[in-house]
Length: 253
Figure 1: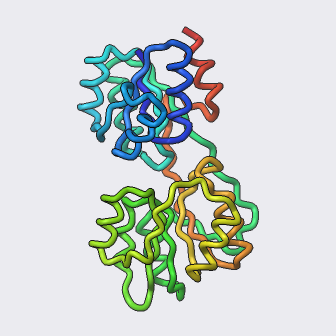
Figure 2: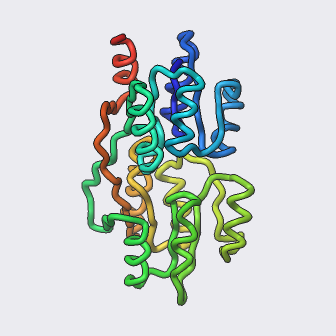
């Protein structure tokens, strides 16, 4: 039995490919939205929903007699990967990391790199930028609510009712909430930046699949700043950057 920790587009592709090839596979997702995506794919019966710490993940590996764990979590889900590495080692399960490649940014005139979310908040606090668009996901919205003064926060998040409600509870006007499912084209990004008169975009380096090239190019064309939160580099026991590599390793046994 193979367990895929997914929640990313590539993770879903891996699960579907395994299932279509007749292999025994289960997958885990952290959110209800992730589960709903699998249901729409007709693969809801393979999906377990909920966040698992290292201990709970180890229990699951033993209960389901997992032989291989494929970690296809988001590039910024560092703790999830650490849990997967630890649980796999404890249970003697083969661990394979799928890590999507980052985006190489050539034109850095308007691009600023920071080490963490807190550094991004501090950058905004020091700057004269007043209309801030967060594209870093719902979980980091609260960090930027520390900013005061005349700054206005806009958020682009997945269209989940609970997240929209919580954003409003945090003090973000409904008119500043863009509940949309990507990917977003360069043209759509540019239209959003212009429509909401954004002067700085906060993003993670989620790679091509995460729509980073289109987002940054649109910002550069519009002449607005982009703050990129760097990835935390981990050392993985086995790491692949393509889905074909993942299946090549699986076929070694």
